[in-house]
Length: 311
Image (cartoon, rainbow, N blue to C red):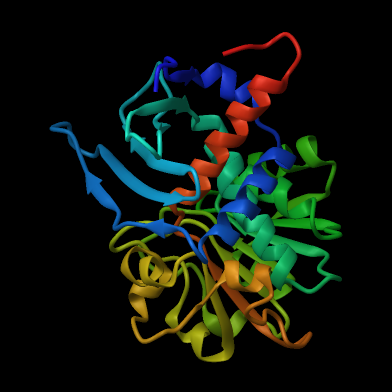
């Protein structure tokens, strides 16, 4: 390999990414789980208290590499979250590209939610409830509302002021009416329920979930994290990105006997998704490397094919 490795900066990737690119890349990644490989997640930290980074690696076709996601809570001038994707040349193992993708990572995560909602939620889903008011939550609302005819958004947050502010942001960004509500009201009214928090215990009571609801759990990606009550699993059809990983670091670490179906199998037609309007469906997203590799490849392709841009 004689060409110099490509480098895409954070500002470049943020300018290149959009919902369509992220959704297409995510769809490719989920289909690739049938033949691709992923490897156990490595979790580390620095000497500074509270810091955390994860390494997720995988390969599929001509994509080989690692995504490094980091969280440095004390950052003030810089974002607390960052994401760096390293692509290797599949023939030589030499460095092919480095893509900084913190902003793009938010699109990538929301795209997985959109795929799950499109595949599993009722087509007439009109009420979206989101539990969580952080930066990622707004991406989830935007992505879900693109694949279902959402007419209102209900917001559940730990703090009333944060919930009000987030509801205002939802309306400003999407044009959808949004209002803060308590957890029981939001869960009971939901056609689609999205949890996007750092919780370490269930966010709601399973009895509040009505038949026909789809639940996307987007926040659990490490040991000890939990957003959903385990009691919901006995009355729901269960799905996830990677079953083995979901039982290790996702929601199903709290229900090791669960046998969730890989969403990629549903998307390829190899497995069934929703079987009736009364089904409760649960999708657990713990995130996997093929999402990041396909995202990086898509960003590189867009940069190379955008008039006026070059590597």
